Length: 479
Image 1 (tube, rainbow, N blue to C red):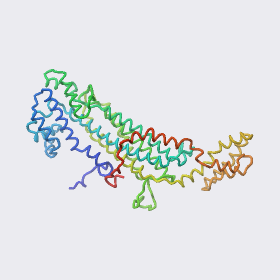
Image 2 (image 1 turned 45 degrees about the vertical axis):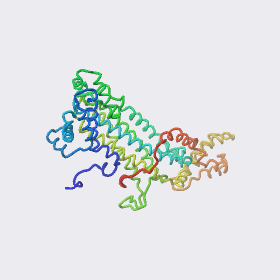
Image 3 (image 1 turned 135 degrees about the vertical axis):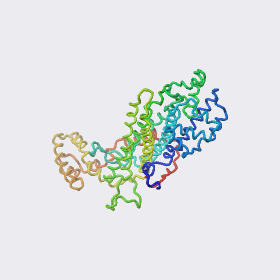
Image 4 (image 1 turned 180 degrees about the vertical axis):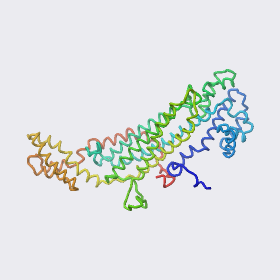
């Protein structure tokens, strides 16, 4: 049998990046376990526990050479993954063997490793998110003053600009970025707390010296990159509320991406803006003319998956009785890596779409021409009253001509409302006035200036120091 005879996650085969896949690999996870064991033994040695320096040095020499076949053999016997890895580590570090995991419980290793992996995963996503912002910033700047129909209730509304609409997508991502940054800066380490979080085993190890026990926790946390950020109290595990916080950040990112993808899909249906479509790309196996927004649809599809995982984390937290139960374990093995992999895939897709958006100004202007005359009617009424007209009479005149013009538009013909009004003296509209009112730039307000200010004051500071090299797409299937 080959690997093709077994199920493999599409996130691994088709969507997520090599960088994120490597982060959640068995090699990375279990090498992280060994690094925690080494940090623990080194701190115990430095604080005077009965751990020889030779054992600490030997551990350091074997942090990455894991014999996974040997680990599997041990786990078949022990039915315990941590003890299987302890024994495999001891095989390659025989001097250290008696001291590996000294005083620790499994969660001292596994929980801390999970927090390290989640922290590193957040940083991978942060870098991708910033690059998406950079691509959307270029798009917004290019199209800052291109008028386009706004939509409220999915109905045509007062015009905005193509660039201004892009800033709305970016604003969502900026809020996500700030949430992510805050969590990265504050995410705590579980620390070295022992079996039920009381540190009793370490208190015995140091003959009742509480200061050394606290220092042990501090040193290991600092060694693993969590200086000053160890949870003050835990049960056997860290509170699963931390998992919920992390998945909440991921859910926020993918919700923003899904909103972006929905807008692009509708704009593509209107013919105004399209996602990239390559020369040899096939839109449909049957309809050869199709240009389906498959990237945006994939973003929406994967986003629903991640959004469905967020409640799972809070549900898991809610049933962790007392100091811990084990019904979280199998669940978390699935939920946490998959959430990161799917979010990673979504940001890859989002950047690909943002970099290749195709704007069709002629189509945008045609749609504006269909609607601008109706939007100008309020201004016409005000001008007519100022010129001495009766507001109610003018309103009725405009209403009748508007209904006739709307019927033409519904029939696929050009909106002729301005021509009708200019030809009816009762409206008070001159041909010059009609020409002036037909310019959509009259209706976009400060949209171009808002783009400039948002990019300069909000986005640009986030992009300082970002390497602008081409983002390497690892497989064509991934975009």
